Amino acid sequence: MSDTFILDGREIPFAPGQTILQAAMAAGVYIPRLCYHPEFKPHGSCKLCTVKVNGRHTASCTYKAAPGLEVESNTEELNAERRTLVQMLFVEGNHFCPSCEKSGDCQLQATAYELGMMSPHFDHFFPDRPVDASHPDLLLDFNRCILCSLCVRASRDVDKKNVFALAGRGIGSHLIVNAASGRLADTNVALEDKAVQVCPVGVILRKRRGFAVPIGQRTYDKAPISGQARTTWQEEG
Amino acid sequence: MNVAAKKKLKVATTSLAGCFGCHMSFLDIDERLFELVEHVELDRSPLTDIKEVGACDIGIIEGGLCNAENVHVLQTFRRQCKVLIALGACAVNGGLPAQRNHLPLTDILSEVYLSSPGLGNGLIPNDPELPLPLNQVHPIHEVVKVDVFIPGCPPSGDAIWSVLTDLLAGREPRLGHGLIHYD
Ligand code: SF4
Ligand code: SF4
Ligand code: FES
Image (cartoon, each protein chain N blue to C red):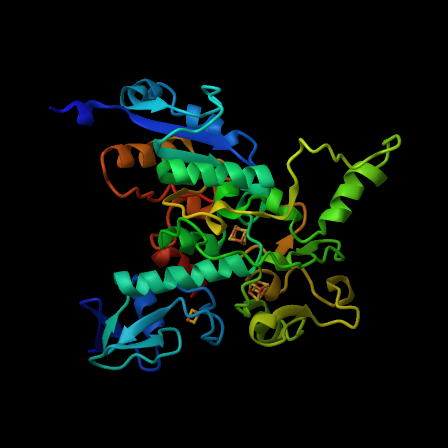
């Protein structure tokens, strides 16, 4: 018999070493998340997956499941906090979904839908972030980067290339390309690289592909991100 | 007496820095327009050609703020309307016009009026009748309090209808999956 903990009143089994998020995913329960990916070490930075464990806030993607924990996740309070985090991500960058190739397939957008984000609420920063179109087959649109570091982890841990890195601190944090010129064309990035597949938003884009599937017929147009929990996660995991 | 209950709600609409796509989508509620006019009466709107907004129950704003006149119209709507709705991506987050925001306004004006090819002795228009452009395009909630947001470029007729019927019935508007869209 495996150990269990309680998530929103429901008993969730877990294997030793699993985090709360991993156990919830295995049980088909949706907990919002942006910087977690089953194939990589948790980064614990976006805080979307924040739950309350025995009354205290913690990131469920880094917190190890333990027998008898009382975990709250899908509550009005936590979802309101998550909505605020997502709103801050929207105003910090430039997210013009109607002209974004990722629209409908984007996890930030789908999570915002899920949380019922009707407006960005805050004043927009409208930062100036030039795109990098130097590479013949890939476009980098930094305007939409949410600093989840998935491309950094994929390039470092899977591709063994270190093409991407996060530089700067605090509000000055930004994604950089590891080349003397700073341009993607001057790296050894390849289309097959894991780093090119993992971006949850519309930063790392294959050129000439953007509208192969029309807007309105994309992943999260068909079903909300919470409803895709089981299938998507099983594929990923 | 239930005269008050039977009185039609006054609704005003306007397009600021928008493309009228949201108004077109509003018309996409199709034959439900007949039901709507049972309950509402239009005040200022591109559909009535009334120029000044009077006291209204609902004000619907398409588009963000790109010039001084937009700000003036928005503030008048806010003063006159009990419930203010931001309709569509541009009203909600600036939308396409806000994609000029990282460029200095002088660079934009000189590119458009002075240096672009095919312009014979170009001049930057400076007629005092013309509203002054703002340095950056802003969504409307950055200037006035907004009560209801309907995102989308444009929001679907169904999304608009859902919000309007919720409001008419005195419910808090809510857009579920399929109706909430930013694209
Ligand atoms: S990355 Fe996502 S949220 Fe940002 S503009 Fe693209 S679709 Fe919208
Ligand atoms: S480019 Fe994409 S994957 Fe990389 S840090 Fe930014 S959002 Fe994350
Ligand atoms: S998914 Fe846990 S902090 Fe981002």
